[in-house]
Each structure stands twice: as structure tokens, then as C-alpha cells.
Image (cartoon, rainbow, N blue to C red; front, side, top):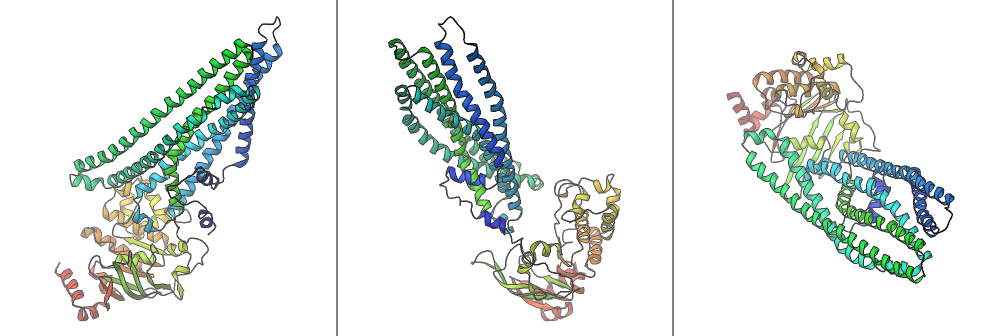
Length: 587
């Protein structure tokens, strides 16, 4: 719960993002403060050296007419340049390193937070959108923190020091120069607001395109089999065109910003040079002082131009930071601080369960059932009746609207979530596998590394050892994204082998053989029968043989239990169930 407590301190995204909110976000990821301070000290020394150089140059120019050449001053000048180069390089690296480290921690926190968000979050947000937040938005912040921010820090020191010395040297010339500051501010403020708005729009458009592209490329076979290339090409072009239009607008603003800033700086330089030349002619200012004044002016112009880039990047980072904060402020699953519970030998009971995604459309209404140890409970009924939703509630992907789920005498909401899920084996109709090797997929989610003998044992129990042996790389065979290099039956048996290796106490089978051909179905069913032995098993029924052998069958229609009993009892008492059975027997 400590992590959740920290996250609540982050500012809510509300469109009124301020610089202090961005700093608060960076500070919240615990940057390396000691290195940051060292980098700042080195940058301060570097800036100090850059402030000494114009004064030394002033001495050289003013002494140019004398017969002697001040070697000591030249040596000090060379040392100042060397100090500025060496310490500036080290200080800049340390500040950038701290920035890279902070963004790394931010990405790690964001990734961890995403993994622990409830399933409902991903129902409402496309996976591509979330990955865009993780990659693209953090990249925008990374550019700001690692590149622009160090320049901003060193430039600020240089700017403040130069301003102080300028006023000390000649307050009249300094006052004339700084009279241009309000004019520059009037130019920057409206441009900054425009860039802030464009930055948010550009990030949102990029995220939308990323989300759509991820979804469509993940279903490329559907697109090709439906001749959908032309439609998706046009759809993608719309996203790309929108990003292009916003990018061009952003480019226009930046194209205006840079020349305006440079013109203002050049005009200021020419004005100071002309006024200083007049002062030199009248004898109220030395040539060396004018040269030093102009060098300090360069010390001011250079930071101001980096400030323009910095604040431009800040505007672009606003939208990214707000969306990252939205994710970090979303409540995660309750993964800490709960008791563990032994499922083995305990009865699973569901009492008066109700569930709906919104109040207008109930999904489950008053569902009650009981699954005793080593029993098989089957759920049958029309598609869309709510059977898979019951499984989702048992996995705690969602919380019921009302009612209770218990294991023994303990409500599952009080059980440690990860411990609860570790004792459940879930095999669905389309068992998910990841890109990688067969070994990786069998090992996935287990707390220890299994030996090859253990992996082969699991494959053998799932009747999958033969086809894995036939692959040249065997356990190290790459199966491709979503297991595209395996047949449906092979994927199912890999999933069942993974369930064997988890050794679950509760087994949930969601029409695990529904989409297979008869030969694959027979092998998978044999593996499932083996897997069900000695476990509490919940089955969303497809095969009649599974229904016949179940200890109890619940018929689900429109989210309600309309009949329950053993196979023969339901045939006699439930006409629709009898119709289902007769249709399978005819087939």
C-alpha cells in the first residue's frame, strides 16, 4: 500500500499543468540527488569561469597599447578556458546522467503500474495507447530532462552572473539592454500557449495512431482474409495525415519562434554596440569595457536561446506528463498486505452474485453455486449468457456489484491476490501464448526455473511431448507472435502443459476444445481429463461427455441460473438443456 500512498501525492491531470507539477513528478522518482548537486557545483564553477573570461579580455584589450604584454593574465585566461571546458564537460554529463536515471525510474514505475492495473482499465483503453504512454510520452519527458534541462540549469547560472556583472560594470548600458525583456516576454507568452495546445494534440494523435496500428497489425490475418488492406490503408492514412497536419503547425510555430528570438537578440546586440561605440568616443567607456560588455551579452544571448528551446520542450511535455499522471493516479489491484489462503481441500462457494459493467445492463443476476473439493462443476447455456464473466470474477479480473465469493469460510477479497491466482489454472478456448520459445511459455509465471525433465513431464501429461520432439529445436523452438507457428491443437496442449506445471488447486476450462478439429479435440480432451484428476474443476461445457460426467451442471440464460442438477436430472426438468443435448447427439 506504500506505493499507492506515494501515487496519491501526484497532481491530477486537469489541463492546467504547471512547471512545479512537472518537477514534482521528476522528484517523485527519486533522482540521484548527490550526483545532481555535484553536477550543479561543477556547472557553477564552469559558469564562474565563463564570467571571468570577459574581465580578463577587458584587461588584455585595455593594456594593448602598453609596451609590456601581461603574460600572467594570458595564462589565467588559458586556465579559465581549460577549466570551463573540463569541468563543463563533466558537470554536463553528471546532470544528463541524473536525468537519464530519473526517466529510467519513471518508465519502470509506469510499467509496473500498468501491469498492476485492473482488467477494467484495459477494457477502456487500447493496449497501443498504453504502450504509447510508456514509450512515446516518456521519450518527450526524457528529451526535456536529459537534454534541455541541463542546458537550462547552466544557462541560468550564466545568465544571472552576467546580469549582475553588467549592472556592476555600467548600469546605464545594462538598463538599456534589459528594457528589451518585456518585449521578448510579450512575444513568447502567446507562442508558448499555442505550442502547449499543439503539443497535447500531437501527443494524443500519435497515441491514437499507435493504438490503432498495434491492434490492426495484431489481427493482420483477419485483414488479409477479408481483403481489408485498402480500407486499413485509408484508415492509417487518416491518422498519419492528422499527425502531419499537427506537425506542420508545430513546425510553423517553431519556425517563427527561432527567427524572432534571433532577430530580437541581434537587434539588441547592434543597439548595445552602437551605444557603446558612442560612449567610447566620448571617453566615458574604455574599449576593453565595451568588448567585455559584448562578451557578457553573448553570455546572456546563448542561454536565452536555449531557454526558448527549453520552454518549447516544456510545452510539448505538458500533455505527455498529464497522461502519465493519469495512469499513475489510476488505482491498482490490491496486491499487497493480504493473507494467503490454502485452496486445497476447501469448498468454493458463490453466493447471490450480481455483476454489471454499468447500471443500465446487468450481466449476472443472483448467481449461486458451490464447488466442493475434487468435484467437476459444469456451466452450459447460450452464448453471451454470462458464463465466461463468472470465470472473470473468480479470477478477480473484476469485482462483483454485489454478492460474495468464498473459499472455505474466507471471502476471496481478503486473500492475497497473487497467491489466489497462483492456485488457479485457466485454460480458455483461445489459450494465449507469447512470442518466444516453447520453454519460455511453459516456464511463464512460475516462481522457480524448471528442469528439462520437469518440462518434458508436463508436456507428456498434456500429450504434447511428441510434436515438440519432432521440432529440430525442441524446447527452444520459436513459436512466433501469438504462437502462429503452432496449430490450434498444439497451442492448446502447450497451454494445458503449462497448467500441469503450475499444479493448480482450482481448474477453470472455458470451452477449451471448442475450436479444434476432431483429432486435436480428442487429444486435448484426454489431456484435460488427466489434468482434472484430483482438482476442483469448473467447466464451461462444449463436449457432451464433459457435461455427462459433471457432479453438478448449472444452466445459465441471460445472466441467471435457470436450472441445476446432474445430467439426467436436467434432461427431465429443463427443456432447453434437453434440446442442447439432442442437438449434440444428432451431430
